[in-house]
Length: 315
Image (cartoon, rainbow, N blue to C red):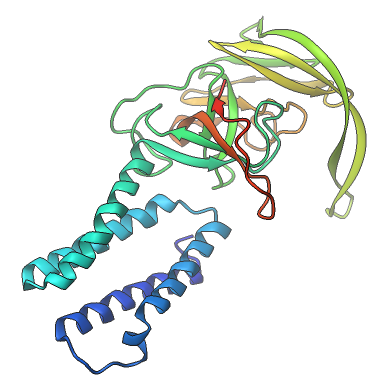
């Protein structure tokens, strides 16, 4: 994100707007040019460009809030030094809410929207989760070492993390700890030789869209009817429902031994999840940035209406 030309241009543009506004306020000149007359509109356009860059690059809004807090604070200090009440009042009105949002989002809770169906049936695409940022220790960035309250993830936690192969946050179920041996036989998970407790619920038939990569490397999709088995699974102190597609991934080819300071994660939608059994691999401890605590809204698409019927604590 920081190397994106759109982001760089938006930062330069926003900074220029702040400088022009300060100069105009200090001079208190009655002469106006195009920029001073339309400073709010221009700043809004650059702000929208910045948000667009964050969205397409899956950037961390916390960084923007941090930068915004610093800029607003510096402008406030300039106003105090030169004794300009207009600059003081305006910058204070920006600094206080931006800084409070930054603190709340960085150190307490952060909203996160699930982008896929890898956690079905409990969590679905479009669900908005509240991520507890201090579950595994406080940190400014999403990755890196915690500097306060270094709690470790526990079995069964719904964790939000940055996978090693992709800067986009993922949400999965924590299955294995450092040093554990994980083995999957006919969709039954064994941790250090002991099977994770599960109980059959029911079977259902549905239509899913499968993605395939042909010999040329092109990805195609195809709808197919499948039979799904639902299970209650109990791991650690968490009890949740998993989803298994009959005929898919009958047996994984090997056993995994989790290295030190790494974890093994899986989606509850076991046959349709990119997790530690596939590209994600083992997740470093420093890549966890929170535990998903609550579901507060579901918004499946931009043209859909959000709904709140599934609000509640996440198991």
